[in-house]
Image (cartoon, rainbow, N blue to C red; front, top):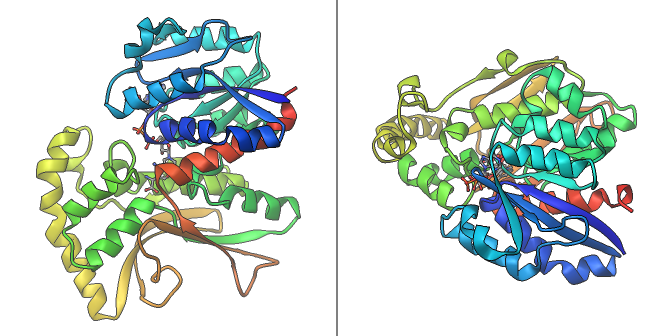
Length: 372
Ligand SMILES: NC(=O)C1=CN([C@@H]2O[C@H](COP(=O)(O)OP(=O)(O)OC[C@H]3O[C@@H](n4cnc5c(N)ncnc54)[C@H](OP(=O)(O)O)[C@@H]3O)[C@@H](O)[C@H]2O)C=CC1
Ligand SMILES: N[C@@H](CC=O)C(=O)O
């Protein structure tokens, strides 16, 4: 039986769902000759590690306790007295991770939405570990950090960073490996914005629909990351960099759905959700009404072409591939030498804890040949 030690950073919607998937797939994995040994779990405040991570692991009851604690909105610090693990506050936890990576090769899974994880990911990968990311931020900082991370490309997986569980990155890599040239990608890459647009089309207020998207686990921890277009821009940047374009976020033209005075530096999240969002209802409703009077719909679209990437709202025919999208579905159209007239199209649920965590789990399993 192959053993893959797993350490999870970030145990919110996606991370907790991943732990549940790991537990519920025990028999399936055993039949494939693989066992995932979860030896550490961290949230924003602390990091829990099995007492002897080289030989011990968290048992499934403890993993489910962790999920319960997190879904009750509590900190992992609550588990400190359980006697099953050692607990480390930040930043001591980072040192513990590096220390452990020197003795044990593990899969470090980033299900946080933090930009602070990149250093520890790079250091552990350098020491022989693997990294699996749902978090887009480590892939969208400087080109230098991106290059560092991909010094060991076989040890890094990040399928869920674009299109959640959809096989977007895998398809792109296969096309590129075959020597085919991709010259255009166009897509609706935000589950949140797709859901919001189609629900507002059906007559619901924008503010209510955004809050519903948050409740359904589609949005980023702060939904302004979605509404500002930043989340889509990050996905666009990841795809553009995979195509070989050495570009930074500053090169992407991004359209925001709220004014700067409602941004994270000007307004606390709670204030934005309660007081800011309703102020946007009318504008979006009017834009959608105007598009509808032309027989069109609004979709938030990402276009990558000629080493340029733009993200923003487009008015599109209702019957186009993008116009037909409903709910949290994403669609990605890839045009290349082989897919010239008719693009390769990937479509399906593009957000949600279940599908995202499933994508992360598939990435971990994909690493099995790198573990003894
Ligand atoms: N939801 C979705 O549909 C998809 C999400 N993703 C990505 O998955 C990631 C997680 O999303 P989601 O689960 O919805 O977010 P949540 O806010 O539910 O969870 C984030 C978790 O990360 C923890 N955290 C924050 N900072 C750190 C840190 N520095 N180190 C370790 N853990 C940290 C938080 O801790 P605490 O609990 O203490 O706050 C929380 O447990 C995001 O990067 C998102 O972009 C990708 C594709 C789809
Ligand atoms: N907030 C994102 C989640 C997946 O990346 C989205 O809505 O698409």
